[in-house]
Length: 143
Ligand code: ADP
Ligand code: MG
Image 1 (cartoon, rainbow, N blue to C red):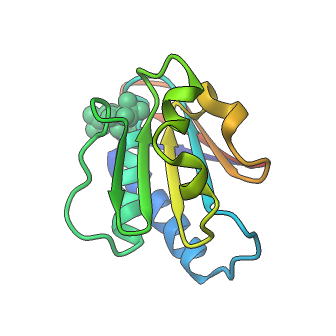
Image 2 (image 1 turned 90 degrees about the vertical axis):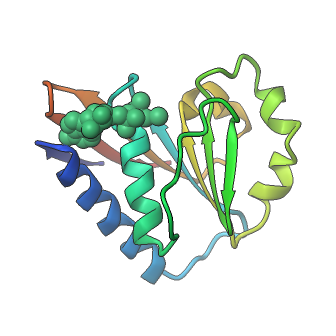
């Protein structure tokens, strides 16, 4: 587990871009998609992180929050927001199994704890804690 403190939005964006670049240069060994789950309260910085991560991956244009559409696709990068999800079945209905089974895909999931049971065992987990108006604790874990 690795912990990071950020003092503002920019520092969170920088951290996300560093992670994206690390992932780009790390050879993939799993047969499934790379899943990154994001946990943390509203306003903690999950979307901010994901937007910067996508930029670091070379995705052009700004990602908009998928809160109302659940899932957005940018090439091989998928952005899900499960805030409004009541049942994991709603996610499975979107060919999620197929998306997860393609090792080319990278899947970024806000409120991932809500659908934990349908996620692969091996994934990156990033937890956000709000410490102050702009201070955030960001904890990287793997499981
Ligand atoms: P979430 O997706 O977790 O609900 P957002 O990324 O949409 O959160 O919103 C985070 C808000 O907090 C943004 O308005 C952002 O500018 C602000 N903010 C302030 N400090 C930080 C920080 N250290 N890291 C990320 N966002 C921050
Ligand atoms: Mg969000």
